[in-house]
Image 1: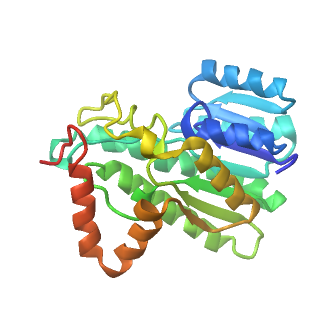
Image 2: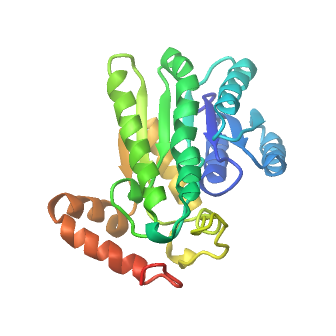
Length: 269
């Protein structure tokens, strides 16, 4: 990754922040994108002390113009773009029957449309560098998770979108990676939206038993270096679940229901 110019959305926390530091350790030039400019400045200051070339751009990925500006500023500053990692995302936790539909629109705006906007404007530069286009999805992009209709729908959509972009550019040297972490210790569950669009606050799951954001970031970057098409992380909740869903979908439905119903204060009765 040395001297590669890499854009990371959702760079202010969680997997995005871990990606930025791992990229810096591997010698990349990094563009940080997120809404929280205060946090980005702290990360930027730290990275510069490490000798990393870095640019911070305040970006709301739900806004097409903001995504276009991010890509243009990155190119103007560094003169090329080698990797775009679409990582920005939010989650939700509520049954559809109880859900304000505006929550679904917000989740889709961040997770799906944010990926579409950034990809659209970065694509010419990625084609020129024969670079890598990455989407950080979730196991929920393969298996429906009850209580997460909007989240699962957005991740399924991102997977379909990126897989199609890969096929469209099959003969142009573009690398497209879809990376699906399992349950990862990050703040996405704390900021998950409830039925009325408010952040739920405390995570309903035991974060200590999950993959760390740093482990996840290292796997994604290794996948970029090896130009993999797809990465499914963790064995039981990831690889095994996706495999079983192809052959015993009814079993996986029941297991998913049971797993999510066990969560503290689960919306599933």
